[in-house]
Length: 227
Image (cartoon, rainbow, N blue to C red; front, side, top):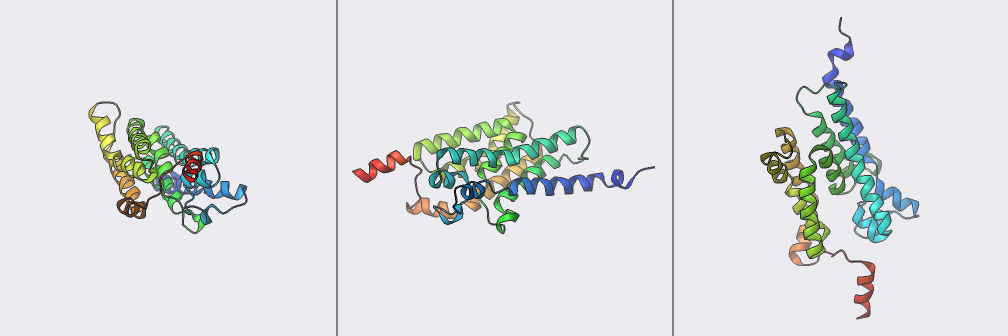
């Protein structure tokens, strides 16, 4: 005789994945770091709660901590959901739950319940999710990001191209036999790329008209002021 839970395990698994991953992604790392320093990071710099603005306003090491927290708050839920699916604790007959966890965590960062649904752009959080799903795709995206960033010093430019390239990197890794990529995961990577472009519309406009801020070290800023 089956129980209610056994009969409804797929629906319960989906609900648990969506809710818990969203709440994990909603943890406002940058906002909390700013508060620990007595400031509201949303009122400084770009107003963003991501690692780039934290680095500019609070400091390099705090920015790295913010990136790590934003990265882990998606990597951990996605890896955990994938583990629970493998152990058949979560029912996943469609092979959907890890990708749902990834999307929910990124959505949580962009629309955090704790900050009236006004969050960051989701690049660090998306990176954590991709690591848990497809490490070769993240490695390729990381190489693209680093190449563009160090060549032009625009975080936005590097982030847009790295995220937009995710479906191509995942597809390429599958073709080379490096890592399997399901149609669901490929759809997720396309969606993450589109989200990155949409969230960076204002940056794209500034890049096109030449007013986008470059990311420079404080020493370089000081040297520029002294000239």
